[in-house]
Image 1: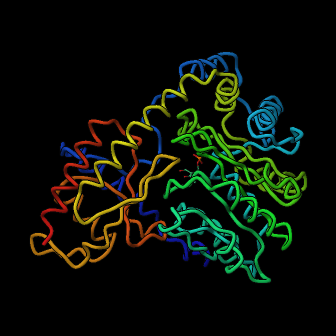
Image 2 (image 1 turned 60 degrees about the vertical axis):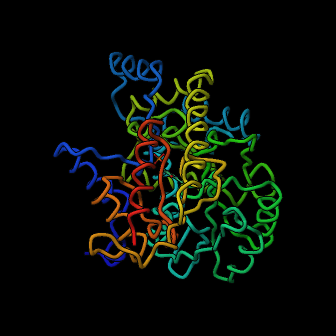
Image 3 (image 1 turned 30 degrees about the horizontal axis):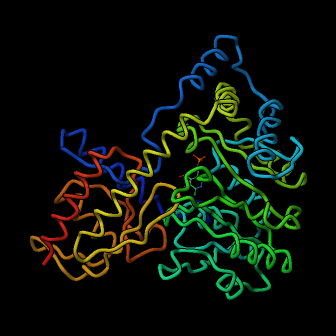
Length: 395
Ligand SMILES: Cc1ncc(COP(=O)(O)O)c(C=O)c1O
């Protein structure tokens, strides 16, 4: 085994999902609150575009970095919606935002480099950094500051080895939407210290309570020569299985990713690219409807969690996740089994109440568990009722 792959743990989210799936298969009434994908269907015109492409024989390789028409449409979207001007040659398309992130990190980082990762964080980011040979350095975000990343925390974590920072707002798993002032201060610091910025904006449309999503690249235009914006189709258009993501970056970075992709995956599936092209010209109605539903569920969950004794949560303003603080219950137990950390909490929760949640330790939040509200209200109600029953049964 390669020594880098040996250092990568399996995904705890996938482990919990697999356990929930196995229980469901046996006919058990499992409530899954661990999903990382919208429960809505892909919009019909998007599916139709892929079917049409297949019927018309659009089933061959494209350029590794995607069809020029899709890259052009993404460049237009970035200008219109995000205020970021890119030529289509500075845009590349990949197998999900995931591959875009991996490509950029892998192409730009080396052994000896440090990469700042605000924490709690999406569990794949530190692992991608490790695969590149660089070292992830977690930058603490706290509940007191509503999980906001602060410029002070970034400055404290900086060392002369800092090569990159990966910012993710709206954030998975905290639901934080970083504010304009902090993002601007962080961006200016990155310019001063020549830190490459990746802005993972995959949840850009999922913001609530009148909050606004800000791209750090638009707030600090001087960053543009040392930054990449990453986005995708998985969340906004419920297209997780189609595997299309994109990034815009300086031309030399795109060229490096092109070389890497050319040897590793080549293009993402051609029919999926046609689907993505159709998604970009859709009106906002399906996405707006989904976000309206997420917002109702978010408010329901926050109210309901606050009624459960012994747990708490910070109200999230973005994405579709909530971190629930459960460490006040560590040390208690049920039926002779002690809950000592987020992992044993989630294991006992699924064993006793058949509710799947993700242990916060997977995200660098050992005092919490993560639930997702990308599931219907009836399920959420059932899941949170069971969580309350579980918590009340701990002694
Ligand atoms: C923060 C974050 N970035 C990137 C991704 C990757 O999305 P995809 O590869 O499906 O486009 C995810 C998926 O859950 C995510 O949560």
